[in-house]
Image (cartoon, rainbow, N blue to C red; front, side):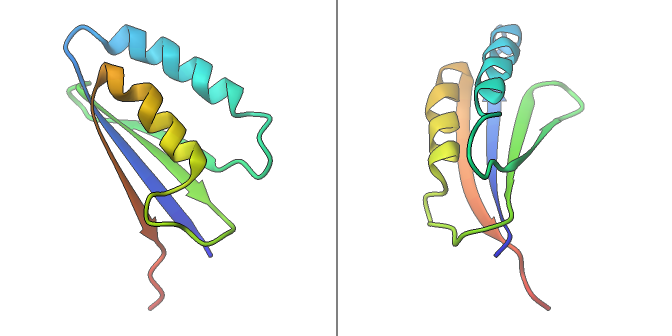
Length: 92
């Protein structure tokens, strides 16, 4: 089953450069993981919010998401308000 976790961060005013540095470190540490997700980063046009999408190709999602998603949420809370949601692909 394909599923996606969306982690959105409303970044504090002066935390952007710190966040970028920490995020680069976190994502590079995930490179060696078994069955890693496909990771995509999006930012809004005002550069105030960042969204991280973890796209999973296998497994059944839990309502709280994956360990990877939970780890990222906990590590990124210091940079602003974080929301985390889990989405499954809808069959037509």
